Image (cartoon, rainbow, N blue to C red; front, side, top):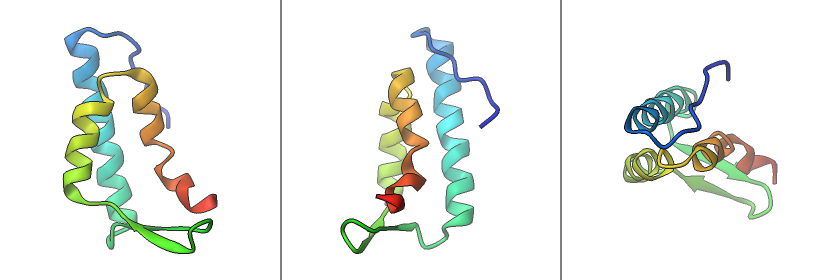
Length: 79
């Protein structure tokens, strides 16, 4: 990830984080068209719903830390 993620709480910072999350999900969905990742610990696939994506960018963009957590999505399968 080379894009700067703003840490502030200004409306513009939140809008930028929302777009960063949307862009991340667009790329993730292109790489995972079935919208699933395998969780080794569970031994099952986890499905990512479109509703979850909307809710994620709307809520996760409210804080810098939550925005960073979105990028851990692909690490689910490593646990």
